[in-house]
Length: 174
Image (cartoon, rainbow, N blue to C red):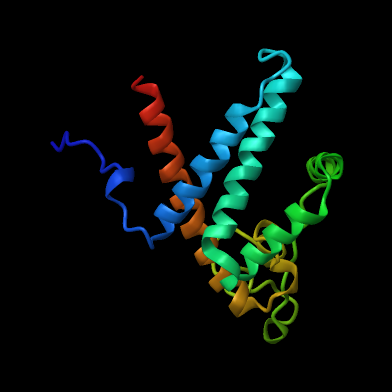
């Protein structure tokens, strides 16, 4: 029986050129700015939601800047953050939650109209169009680039979660 703790990330011993280090530095800087803003009423639901949105935007922006412009999803994320006002982002979120998920069925012509599961996502459970909606900038990519960007995006989201968990753990020790 293995009772050892899972490995944690040590912010002091990071390689300065690593993705984790770049993200952690930018994100902590953004959190410091957010924390410096004095809330009108810290316990109001509106203020809590606004702080949540600021932290979410700070995390997205920090990760996109950490990756730099080498990836399509990071360029799309930064463009989206620059061009949308807070109200239009809320309207987009409301629209997304009210729109039913579309599924696409790929028909294999050799099977006379029967659905071919291999072409439909190789058993991943995610349709191509749904994947395009999940990855920023995915709408304009061919399938090969979409899969490459998706893999990198998942790696970056995992890194983001690791750094945010470490920060939360450090603050919970106080």
